[in-house]
Length: 602
Ligand code: ADP
Ligand code: MG
Picture: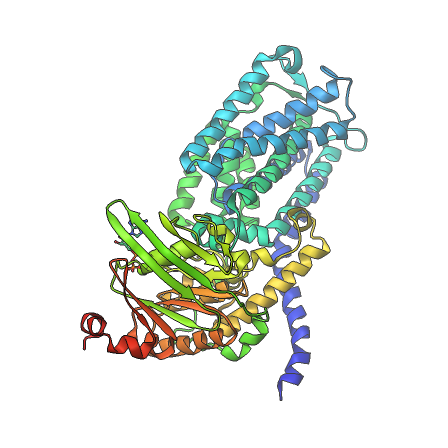
């Protein structure tokens, strides 16, 4: 077979592509930081000071970017954590309360405080919706400033307190600049590592496809708490640097303008990007310098800039720089799944258990969506679920996958009853699903979307990703390989690097199947996968589903296309108004009088 020769060639091509991609990503950062590094050499102390300020702001913004740009949380009061870090380091070093701390120990304590308060401020985000969370971060900012003002014996109140001083060689303007630049580079590297890890992808999935993340076993509270920890520590550390740069701090050094700057830098930079917000931070720090007569108007300038970006380039700087996704796509492309590759992907032992629904009932107010339903999903069998619109098919899927808690009845997998209303518990049991309306991350590439499906298969922790340790790199390799395999199975591998929002509807349906296959599922539930597909595509979809079943997977197929249902199902349940109208093999259902007269037009 010719596969032998190509298999030998693939690793080379892969590493080559990998290096080229990495170089393209790293180059702009090298240019920016390289240019920054020569600022003190070619300009005066004043500009070195401005550059230091930009580096410190970026230290904070890089962490906040994961909260705002990636996880999509409206944290607008982050100046509070800068304040907290600035006062913590200054007070500890000065010896106002305890014996004076060594400088770097004080920074460590500040980062720890920042992490703790980052989580406390963030907690409301786990329950409150966007705007309330935004208000609570703002409230926290006000409280911190008020405490700094009132707690005179420690903070010096309105008179202020001296900032910490760095030892040589960092005690000069240039020395401090290089220290802060080093921190900024480190911050960039760490947050980029997180962004390109399963955690970073889970964050954007929480932002843009929250419902889908639950079905993939991703825990939103856990993810958000870890990111709040990180962003809080970064922000408070930046606060310590800020106090050093200022040499003397008072509460009014931490104005609301700063919070606005941090937040807007991310918005004009573009969500889900690192380069964009970095450029955003630099632009916003420099802007008042170039518009010196307008310095008092800086907030106004930011607002104008933000409006301009929202109107002209809604995706921010990152979208402007995304040249790759401007190339037109081939218009008459076809999806050709390769079911033959499936065994490589689904190497998991097939299930011996059955998903059993017993006497499930669920009402929404007066609507009885499901009424006493019994249904089994058996390994290596395709179970078709049909019925008119509103008959309870999707609701049944939502009950099995834990989105809805039925008022009575049980869903069990073998001997274990699956917890009701807990969708994030299904993935670990190997129960995967797709959605009637595809739920994907439009701003992420097709490959990344599929990799999101394998989030829980990774072994490394967030800290290992932060520092790009071996387990993180192994996870990334494994996830990318598996995702490329899944894309080959569904026939989308040529679109791997394309943004998902550029795909056609039918392609999104196959994309969702690939993502579900990343769980190496024992059970797969498909909600109208053929809707919007051409006749050819439906036939190929049918072949793919049959092959998935052939690998021992139990399939639940909700569909309207009678041909597909009768062609591939082993068992069919017909619902009407939440009740089972008929159940049996395809040939039995074909002869069922009521079904035939109602749905099959016979
Ligand atoms: P199908 O998928 O068979 O078209 P569904 O399961 O989506 O039907 O809906 C069954 C019934 O339950 C419909 O009457 C629908 O309006 C109702 N329903 C489904 N989900 C909800 C919900 N979250 N809130 C209120 N009613 C709902
Ligand atoms: Mg439906």
